[in-house]
Image (cartoon, rainbow, N blue to C red; front, side):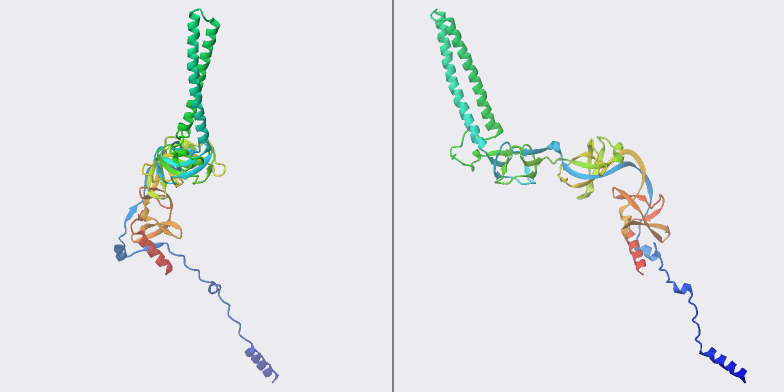
Length: 403
């Protein structure tokens, strides 16, 4: 009887205990990794016919080695003029503005200066002095002639004759000096200040409105007004720059060339210059000077490139890039620009791996030459890529990634 009770208790105890949970497999606990986005696009025959893809074979070709550098367009300093104030004065009129085209001797501004009145006073004084000395010369000549006649008639002494001749020579020297002074004051007015010798008929004290009372500021040559540093009413000191005039038919590019490339270039080399305003129209130039000092911060040296600019398309301070033909040749691979596509900020081309299947491959690009782009990394000569229609493959690739 006791044995039966023990067996019943054991059975009850076994029924009352909870069953243990089954262990979870590690593979089920782990999250399933997302599949990597495919870099291939496959088109069936119908899609290929609709896409009308044009394929090209990557070929390597020998091209002249070039040195690339950047810089800016500046005026040709051999064909530019800094127009300054010839004396102290006040600017009364300004006739031109930056960007205006001017001709040689064209009036740029008018300046009033007390130097005009002082110079005219000196001129009048020199005229009067010369007239006085000419009268004195005439008297000295008559006096010498009379002394000579008296000496010839034995009525005068040799000392009197010699004294009269010395007086005549002194007077002649004074007349020559007065003529030099008169010429100096005249040139100062006419050639330096470029004003009339005398006041105009309607001149009144303090008059600054008449052109005859103003010093003209004129253009020294044909060109374009690059800078204007004065306005009507401003005061200028002698030597102050008023205008910058430049002939823009030729301009300079100052290129910054890396130290490692300086041994490859020399004066006279041809250069192709590109600017952002005309990306498809390179400008031909040549190196005219190599800088003598390196920039300590950038480790570059300035190189001056002269460019013809007959149409005026190149403007001072334009950003520019230069390709300097270094003379040697190097192998390079070029592909059509339309073969390049942008995917996630990377340059990508579509390479045919087998009929109907194309791989999106990232490439490193370089120079642009006649509509083709240099590929430095990512392609091998002989591979077939898609040129026209590559955008269709890009759309299919992005569509597949989204799905």
